[in-house]
Length: 236
Ligand SMILES: NC(=O)c1ccc[n+]([C@@H]2O[C@H](COP(=O)([O-])OP(=O)(O)OC[C@H]3O[C@@H](n4cnc5c(N)ncnc54)[C@H](OP(=O)(O)O)[C@@H]3O)[C@@H](O)[C@H]2O)c1
Image 1: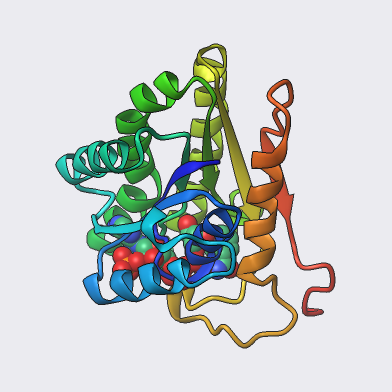
Image 2: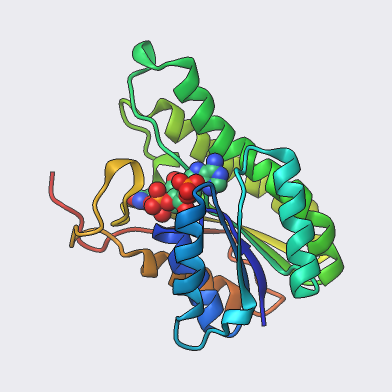
């Protein structure tokens, strides 16, 4: 039974991952910055079939806040008696050509999508080591491999996240921690002004299923990079 933190677990892909882990009988701590969305997510996750509401919690934490992230890990370990799984999912996009990109937007994307993952991971490693069989699953994007105009900040953050995960994987594997990066294509969420009602895109549940597949792998095996894309994308 997993004891997990899912960052950005209050909507979209993170919420679907949190519901899947809770629905399989696991403990889940979700984070996000918005208190109202977090409370609603905790209710929704607790009401998922197979979930035990006493095993679901939320904490409003910005992943860019080092102290907040340290408190998040400590609170989770105290509440659940340990930590086995960290899903670094929280992420933002800001899309503009480099010539027009503001310092603030550049920093927001890199600080959330890359430095936030670093803070969460570094804070969680001691507890994951102690658990003896931990997972760190980072949600990157296929845009890491397929950069596009206007996506310099976002695509760079996700490409760096892939490199971060693959270096990390080699550092922690002998401590019983498996690190894997998931690269989804387009997913129907509210990400960056998107809509949840686009039928050709992946569903957040599809990404959650890929994460659950990872968690089901026997200890000897490590799918370290997973790409998942819509089977029939919109034709250009
Ligand atoms: N949607 C896609 O097409 C797609 C494709 C590939 C990869 N991805 C990646 O998948 C991840 C989830 O995306 P999504 O589509 O589910 O987006 P979403 O619906 O916008 O959800 C993002 C989640 O992250 C949280 N978050 C954002 N900034 C945060 C911060 N600084 N600290 C803590 N939490 C923060 C949000 O809550 P608050 O706003 O309340 O903080 C929310 O819970 C992202 O890393 C994204 O880059 C998305």
